[in-house]
Amino acid sequence: MRLYHAIFRGAALLAAAQVLFGCAVRPTTQQVTGGLDTARIAQAIRCEMRDAYITLLIGALSQGRDKHNMEVAAGLSRDRLARFIPPNSASLDRDGIAIARARNESQVFQTLLTSGYKGLHDEDKQLKQVVETYSPVFIVYKYVFDMTRTDHLGGSVDLLSVLTRGTLTIPIEGSFEGKRQAKREFVQADRVDELLTNLPTIRVCNRLRAELAGGEPLPNGAYPIAGKLDLIEVVRSFITANQSGNLIGQVSEAEVLTVQNPKPVPSMSETLVFTTTLHAGINPKLELAKRLSGTDVQTSILQATSDRVDIHTLTLIMQLPAQSGGLTVAEARSKAEQEEYSRQVEAGVRELQRVDDNNFRDRKSKALEVITGE
Image 1 (spheres, rainbow, N blue to C red):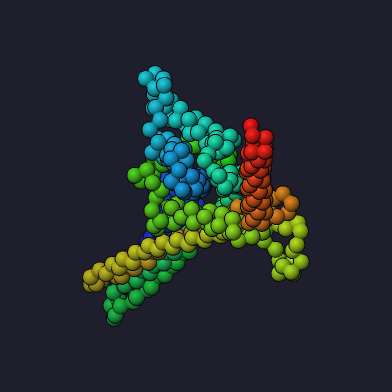
Image 2: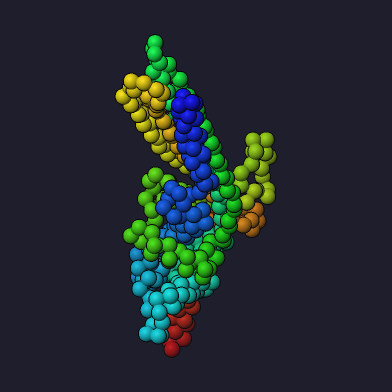
């Protein structure tokens, strides 16, 4: 009877451990990031995209070191916008001031993108072209959060019975493996001008900026998609490919040689894949001194491991609206510059003709004076 009870006790120990180990909840991003859910991660990515376009816009305004343009650029800076004090600040609480700052920021960009850019010092119309071309850029973000947790529990219990003529060892083994997978997919979209002026987006970005480490995005560490993704490089490549690279929409190999007019609208896609693997395990072993009689546990081994594999995919697509005349951005820029050059040449010719006409009239008047003696 003691042998039966010992066997039952050992088996019950393994079964209970397996049940407890298998009660883990489904995997979520919060379990690894310390509280960041998928919605906040996606929002942080949109905010980084917003900051990327603002940074490049400030850089474009600062080229040439024109005093007026640089003052406009300074007004778009994060420091200047964060220091805005509403006129009625004395009667506002912290949330009220945050709302007022977001409204001011929205108005600053709304004014610049609708009419303010026309007052920039922009002789060659380059700034006008940049604002009008890239304000309507359409941005798509596709997220796939694929999280898998695997729990493995194995163990063995060796029962030792001391008999009159020797010993009897009874090994009991058991194992359990449980796997849980959660996969979440969703898509978001922005237009650049709306991304820069949308009030809820500005408020969320300002709040995230204040909440995350030191006012900056989390470092690109153990959970990369929750950190800084260097999206400014993606945006800069998209703009450069349009400005001088004749970027068009993606086409299949069969269509490459037949693409003429109208060309597919300029677009670029970037796919980022982040894989994070976490592993933990424990392997305790218990050995008891041999009994002189009876039956009891001699050795007990428990092997417990937990693996977490997160594969997250972010696909970014940036697309311009169809260009007039089916031209690429680079072709449209070239055409505009050539037309501007032709206008300047014609204006120069007219000015030379005017000067020649004035000189001719002056010479004719002097000749008449000589002839008439007047």
